[in-house]
Length: 382
Image (tube, rainbow, N blue to C red; front, side):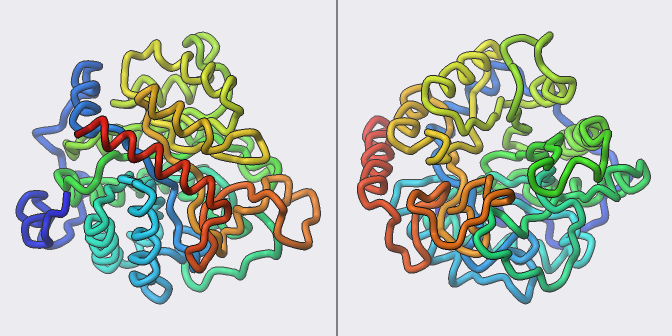
């Protein structure tokens, strides 16, 4: 990495101006990678390790990226802490409303983020859509966090009103093509994660009544997004991660899980389970013969902790992204049950996150374990 701005623009073929790409075909559109091509990518990429990243100043994706609340100095500081742990990748969520509001401005801020990450030897996994939490996203100032509640302000992309309407789903094509085309050859973009937990019913937070056929409607967008993204011919792999259910055979998988695994270049998944269960989940996905990326893990209250799970992932050659990094407005130090159970103070055991807002570790021994684990990765690479 560490390509300069000028070199990045030259090497990555970043568009000098944004073009509305709906309806434009790409003669060089590629097929889904073969298993051998995917394994070759993993050999080049090495072991990717990092976190799902949101600055402490943002309650959600919109607040992270909007012009009035984008804070590059905080991002620079926090990614410095990530570099200090040996992280070489971060998973970051985008939002279609930002593109629709001001594509050029949003892209400039994304450029700036990629530059900051690159200075810290960190690559980026970009997430285009997300099916979790508030189903009614709105631009502008975001609400303040609800005290002591996990992810009280995170928003879906797109929301329920878009998912239920075929025309509005189709209108997302310029966003997908615009983002993927702009960064399709950018070496700082390591992976394209197209849709996070698309069928999540949010039953324990916002309820399942918003869209009763959400899984079916989300699958419509998922399949279109894979086709749109692939038509732009990106050099990094495409994926969308399975996160619940039984993955041991196609017959036992849900239709949307089969759609995700059959279209992904590399197989991604979530597990917040204790190590023995996580190992079973991992084994069930080996049958695909493709690189595995755990894009969400680490929930202390569930028995999913860095020690030994991060080392297990390293030894199994599975990319690993913990949920959370710096405690902040997302309040993910609180567990999921904070939506039902009242908390009045910081929990004795944090659910997610590694650092406090001043950069001090929640658990110094945990931070030392992470550093030792990533250093062993680096030693093996040398």
